[in-house]
Image (cartoon, rainbow, N blue to C red; front, side, top):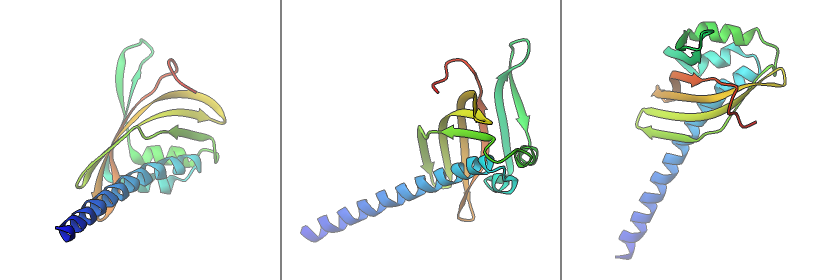
Length: 151
């Protein structure tokens, strides 16, 4: 009976370690995006996304109506690449990461600073897909607000 218990313990431990490394690799992909933003590195930003990625922001227009803005990864990366290094500093925390095979989600509340000054806060909702052994951001939607932020 002892050898079975030892094998079961090893099997459960290795699956736990595997789950941890998968979560860490999801976090690394998301962090790569923000590292690219902070360093004004358009290439690093682009490589965090899949070729067919969708970027959206939930915001309010001038009339106060809720809208969803769409942005192309290429345009976003080009914009980031034109910034000064350290100008765009989005500080996130990982509240939730879930993984099922090649699909992952990450929910990351954030505070955004531009040129050292607080700008806004919100939440990012990421959908990632593991393609060719690498996590890529497939879908990113975020909220942006200035009220109710915890700096």
